[in-house]
Amino acid sequence: MTVRLSGALSEFVSANVSETGAYENISEYIRGLIRRDKERVEREAFDTLKDELQHAFTAPDTSYHSLSAAEVIARNKA
Image 1 (cartoon, one colour):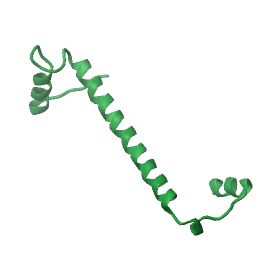
Image 2 (cartoon, one colour):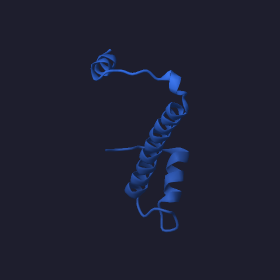
Image 3 (cartoon, rainbow, N blue to C red):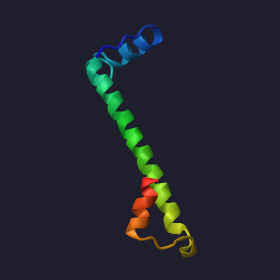
């Protein structure tokens, strides 16, 4: 995999990858960025699920109705 950077982006990476920077090499820096982005995506998915569950748990009982397993399967196929 190859990534080409120029100008301000290249300078920014160089500043973070050096003896005085936070990373020893560019690969370590890129892996760190990807890990943080992956964690962000997973956290957003978890927060969405948490919000949906919170909404479901606070809904009044009258908003629910019984479904058979066959009805659930049919609904999910649609």
